[in-house]
Image (cartoon, rainbow, N blue to C red; front, side, top):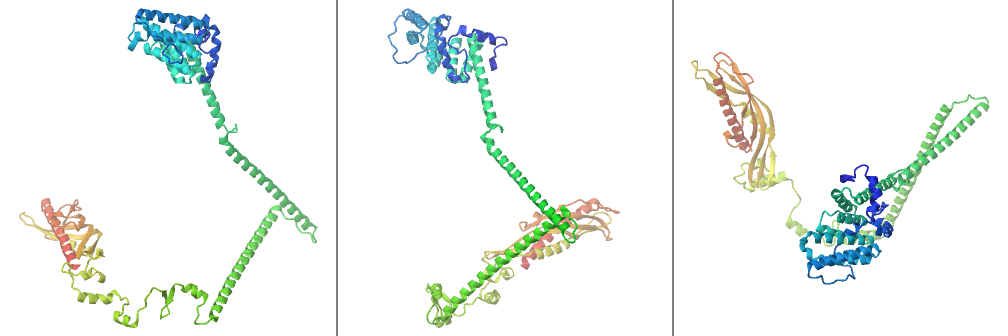
Length: 566
């Protein structure tokens, strides 16, 4: 059985001799473990023939009603002697079938020894006698179908000796009777470890194993039945009904199609007979040609029906429209026939809560109409275009000194510059920056004997991207720009011969860079390395560095022009 399996060949022997060793174990354990106590009564009559080792199991304290309590003797020897007498009385009562008296005797014996083993400190003779009394009492409780009490009494015996095989066995069979198979199996496995030759323990383990296997088989069969599509399971009933319905619909459709085909062929045969019997006789037509002609005829008839239906709907809509117009014209004629001084019902309904002004407008009764004198005092309040008032505003309102030509940025309505307004200057700034960068040059005089002069010039501005704008807010201008570009340059000598060329990258030209040294200029590798007669690499690098400085100054010149122009 799992961890402690009974060796092969011993299972039959265990099952055959179990009844001779223990009388309170089921010979035929039921699959339902909680119902196996019903078979225990058959063993009561054979109790007298059982080995007295069964009666040497133990008992625990019990609070059963009606138990007689007497004061234990002071002398330990006297208490031990009386406890042994109670054990013998209990055995005799058990043999005679008086289970109640037997339980009472075992309980009295346990009570007498209670004070002799406080804290489990008694001598071995006292402990052994306590275990015998408690295991016997556990067996009696089991036969009385008091399974919980039987388990508790066996647990008390195990508190004295946790490796007592009989106490483990008693608690195991009681737990099994209560339905706690796991606890029963744990106790019986422990008992089997301590005494592998105990046939009663083997039989009980086999019974538990068999019952668990039966339960698994039943559960498996139940689940198979529940999920089987052939067992009428509710899980599949809807699906089966749907499939059955679809199959019936398919058969019905096939039947209707067959009937329609049969009727259509009959019509074709009639047509062929009519053609051949006509004067003069006509040639018979094949079924395919006749079917094609009939389908075309049906389609034409269907189109004609749809067209007629649409025309009928349009006619009804037109009649309804004319009826509404006639009704509307009739109501207007009735209103026109009434006196001009009196309001019609429709006018009263539309003017309820309103009034007409002198110019014929309809307005609320709460609206006050101005007099001619009041209109003359107020003057013309008609809205005017901004261009008409811009010149007047510029002549009458003095612009703040911090704006510096605000009119080129702000609108006429924002002459004071208090509202955020932004003007896009990207196109102008790109052109201005390109022009400034192309003006960058550098001259370097070599320190050699010839005192050669090298000039670095920007030949082309490449890939200039970005945007710029001027923002007006709080009476001040803000110049915002962010560009990325690169420039191609050449280095020439006194004879206007190109001795080197390369590219400078300016990855971040923005309004946050205000100082020359803050501007990043990346020097790429030489596109044409310095070469030529008497050309020194160090002189070319020095000329290149001077050009980098002038490129930075060109960017600052662009910023100055940007600020001055806007």
